[in-house]
Image (tube, rainbow, N blue to C red; front, side):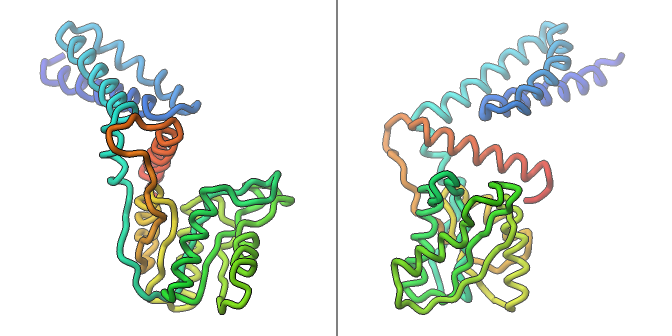
Length: 259
């Protein structure tokens, strides 16, 4: 085998192994363990060559060091703004509030959903739009006996501002942000809207914006404020988990060509 061909194959194997290790470092569910096993054969090939063995070892150490710096040091807070898309709100045809989950057992909205709902209501009360668009999760996601997020959201608006003038639209039978973007495109085109305000969590706003742009929806991203300890403090477990989950979803969206 020629030196050039061997170098090319080795470089490809190294890239494959390093990407799998990086992916595993950030995430922690079963597909990533599978990727780690798939990374072992090319890694073993590289270990046969002393020069490439040193290169692989250096790459793995670098990946681990980057993961530690990103997740366990104040460098974490330099990464967060990269996931946030925020613009100044402007008058729009509607305010689309993406779902952040539901507690089916208690029949209430968890903090992630409630903060998005409150942000959407603030924009509505400020006069940016008179239509609120809420997500209705699919029964396949939470079961038929779980309250609908859209219904709880509407009840919150009626209960908080009983005399407000508001119209509601629903993103029906959605299971994830991709479904929400497709349903939002349907509603936007159905009503011939020219612009909507997109409301979601701060760290979710980058992926949501990419999905809405992919669907051709004219929107302005107005996410919930990014709340973190910041400064030179060590990030909390909740902040690390939130970042890892969002990175996982971004990676999946790119692999599935949804973004």
